[in-house]
Amino acid sequence: MPGNTRSGRETGGSAGGRLRGVNLARHAPWVALLLLPARAVPASSGELEDRLRSRWHGAAVVLAGEVVSDCDERYTNNPVDGRRLRGGRGERFAAGELGRLSKLDLHRAGVDLLVDLAVPARISWVDGPYTLYEQVACRVELLVDLPRSLVRGGDLAGIEEVLERLVERHPSPDEARRSARWNGRQTEPLPAGYERTRVAHAAWKAAQVNAAVQRRIDLALETADRIAAGVETEDELYALGFVEGVETGSERELRDCEAALSSSFSRPYRSGWKDEDESWKEGFEDGSRLAYSLVVARRLQGCFLPVPPPPG
Image 1 (tube, rainbow, N blue to C red):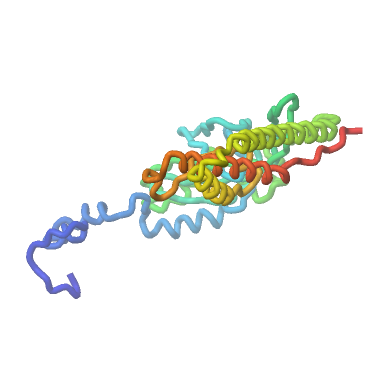
Image 2: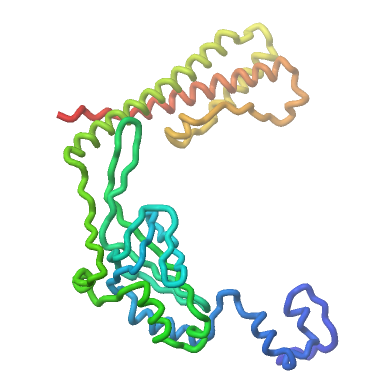
């Protein structure tokens, strides 16, 4: 190899080490294949991908098959089975959905099309006695298989022929809406009087949270009262452990209301615990538990939610 005057066998642990001393020229074809990254494509494919993107990126599209989307910030995978879009779980959209192609990624044996659906969807869910609704944006990613020969041969027309079976491309959304394939879907409106439902739900939700906060405060204070009533004031070792336990428990940090509501007391650790007197250890745990309970009660005092007035 250029710049390397070493000769003979080498048995290093790396792939490069194992190949030294081998006649690479003799094995060049298969060696080159083995050293290619798993998803690598021929150098010419970069130009091919650029050409595809210049023709497809940002285009208005009409999807030929049914797709599904989780309708969150991610693009939901939709594998393509032959010429048919094959969706999974999520919000389901019939063939003819209108969208915008936001990204195209070419691979050795396929192409991924990331599409933002043009029309928001109305989703619903149940919380307690209320059915709630929201209008949300939805996204899909079409995972299209391609014959490797099309990519390897730089066959732009052949690749586009595959894509056009799945995606009808248009220069503008207005032209896409004039397509006979467009399904004409519009976002379902929110139910009549939904604002009253939303306000009523917010009031109900706040009341539920406040009740949970109050229950947790009451439990913490009851625990603190019970421990305080049983403190062994005449046992010196217990008292010493209790004081140190209070100091330790007071250092517990609860970052937010959710943490305060869900937290639980954990038995404190102290270096040299096994060498301490049992009376000292009992005092240390009682002090830690009492202090922790007061920390929880104090933190939760600021976690009550304002209850909106009922709808007029």
